Image (tube, rainbow, N blue to C red; front, side, top):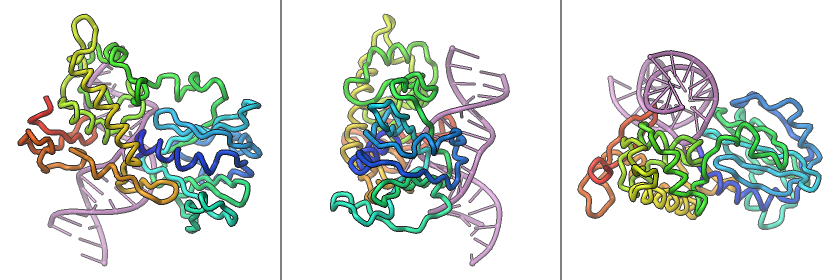
Length: 296
DNA sequence: ATAGAGACCTGTGTGC
DNA sequence: TGCACACAGGTCTCTA
């Protein structure tokens, strides 16, 4: 699935096209996503104007009729969710690059019919994605958001707050970084890549990065910088395109060309001073890629 | 409370 | 070509 950089890239593609348009109708072709769509989902959105497309962690937030505190459409892409535009005949040149008239497939589960004959199509083969509605002004109280951790971007990620969350935890760094209640937005790729950049073993217990006095250790500070940097680099590259993920205009991200360890088992560790070889292990049922020589 | 396993669902790639 | 199996960007629920 898309992790934070992919969701942010999708947000940047959707926002200029969606903002200012109205939702004329919502077509539920297959409403049993990961969770059933809430009752009244389509009716709550039809006739609304889209004012802003935002993001929190891996969630897209479509704010409607902000002045009247209209509902916020919350969307999670799961592992294979994607969007594309179809059908408009009168797009501006800037919007035209999103034009795509592929026939609808069995995995096109929800279609938002917008004004001007433009359709936004949500496709999700595995149906791990889902949609929900949130009340404007009360997003942080919504069950999906109430327990989310720190954004891994910029100053939002503080080493001292992370130290409090890591303290005493014996779970491996890999598992703790994947926990959305600790840092919200990382997934399997960027956890592997951040740990490589920080030269930390994914097997190391998270609590070992906290000093006796509860302050962050030098290792934890290194990890915070690695997480920030890898996320910033990935967003700048338009995310990573592996199997399913493409942007709404069909273009692909390029960060996969910069992977140091993810999906690179048996390749040499790219650190110039290191003679290690990338290995793959399984943690919490997920593949972890790392260099056992320089990541300690 | 916390760590790990299994479940959810479908598609794709690999090896026999 | 067909078939079985492993694995995939996530995260919720259950078990120790």
